[in-house]
Image (cartoon, rainbow, N blue to C red; front, side):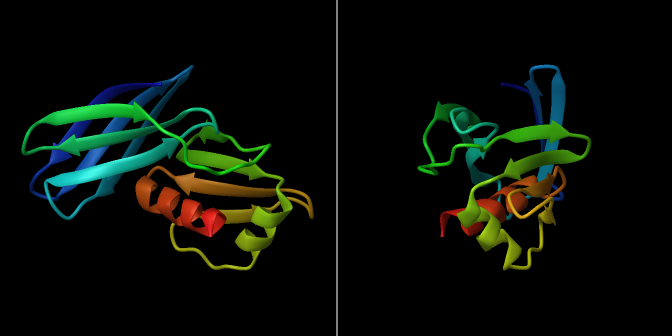
Length: 137
């Protein structure tokens, strides 16, 4: 994965990031409260997890690979039009996600053994945070 372009709008405190991943160009955007913020644990697969720290006061960008500590067998993010989808087969995650209402992610139960989670590119980090909060706790 490669960070192709990053734009920060100081007036609206929003940013847009364009990532290249295989044959996909993935754009995500979100709003932040200040000019200094941290992006943590952006994932495409269980093994491909990286953190990005961005500070516009020092114009510093770092990309580091880290581990979330989520132990799952069938866990992957697939880029789609308008965001990412995640197909989960872990019974514990299916139970947790089917019992909670969400604000930033869409959940569709495919069967008793599968659930699909869609994280839209708009408010992507809020959606990713909501998803990770649900499955980790």
